[in-house]
Length: 204
Image (cartoon, rainbow, N blue to C red; front, top):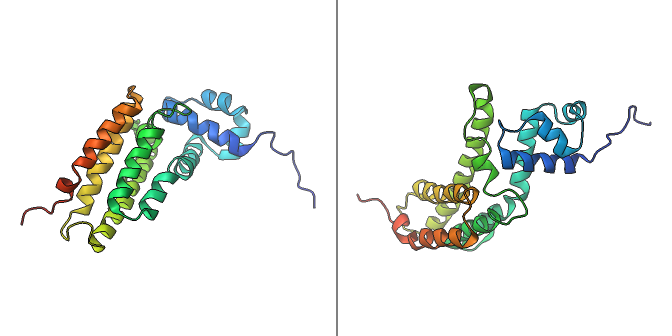
């Protein structure tokens, strides 16, 4: 049976990618519907028909960001043979991508909704949940390091993950402020030099 109605006159995946880049660069609240429709090459009715609302579009854009820009970090934390190598790979990859030049600087999940009005609190909470999930993924990799004897038995893996997550988030802000790849790599050098101190168990 032939489907009724006219087919969409745009590529949904391409439109979503363009929306992601606008949200990434400008942030959720600073991005208007006009900004979105202009970047996506569609009219407002088509945007609402395809994505439902600005917030739903943003959530899809965040999911796309995680599946594309976040994929190398996820692979590092799940596939590399040591916790130290995994964490350093995450930091180095972020140092590279935050200033790559072919996309907005910094991390969308860190920067796109740091300040929101009460009406948009769910958007802010959604990104906070995403950031927490990233820290939890790193903590699980560190816990595996404890189980495998790479890290001391009493390492506070949650605190250690929080430290390196804070470094990552700070690098994102620095990148948005104009830091270079060399600048960010220096930060990574120092964060990794602190590995043994950060992994040390708390005093009894």
